[in-house]
Image (tube, rainbow, N blue to C red; front, side):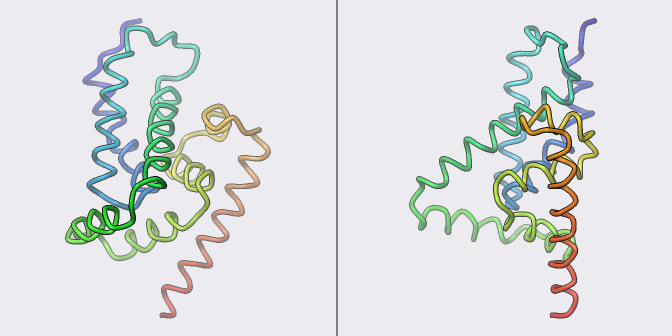
Length: 159
């Protein structure tokens, strides 16, 4: 079965973008990482073995790209990062969505990935496959993350 890159791009671009936004909460960076993901999908589509769903494969690529970016940022001098964030703050987003992304960005790295995939309606079995965690662990962690985010969102409402 031959897969059409344009169809894959149209179907998954928004989902990958939201995954990257959930991970970094920076629109310009999320867009760059999404584009990097689809460059890799384009390069490797012909060698995709279809041992997993195409969405699982794409999310795995996006997850790896986000993890690499996170490692790069940990080594980046703070002044460069601050300048980049200040430039992106001019982008307007819905206030509640911004608060949610802000809350997600404060989670530990693996939790950001888990909840971002969950919000994209990726099945827990696929999340387990993407992250290398057991399905039970994924289910428990997502439940805990949702509870923590709900509490954080309540704090925003009372402020």
